[in-house]
Image (cartoon, rainbow, N blue to C red):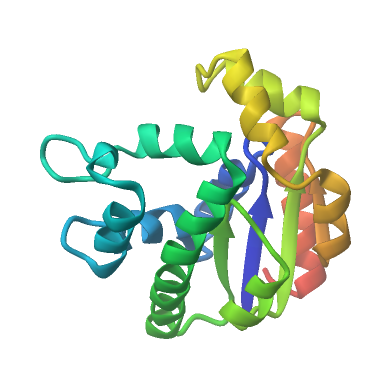
Length: 195
């Protein structure tokens, strides 16, 4: 069983993924897959350089991810162009990793969920971690150190919580304490019949 673990920036998806790992469940990370498929010399890396130019490269030839993120969070067309390049490669890598694990349940953490991902990953369910916008903003400006303008721009570029709730089979609200979050995850696991 593949379960997509989704959530917007600052919602707490990473905290849920970490807790699932502590509980012994395999959690694959789409961000890690994205880094792997865009290493210098890979087909996706070449396509990104062709689409965005060498300005997106660091001196060692690797992608300047912060610069590229700034570009795509300011321009929806640029974000769609980047996603069209990277998503097929990321999905293929994740599917291969799921197959290699052969575990009864594998969670796949994705930052930007779209309904087509369910079929692309062969997912049985989608869990959405959601937090109120003001909670997510505080997490981004505080611990992550983003400027308030940058944090607001990133939050605005993503779908809202209503859309996440509509797509999800399980919604995990995360506006409280870490202990409350863990309890919500435990309930979701119990509903699966998972120990």
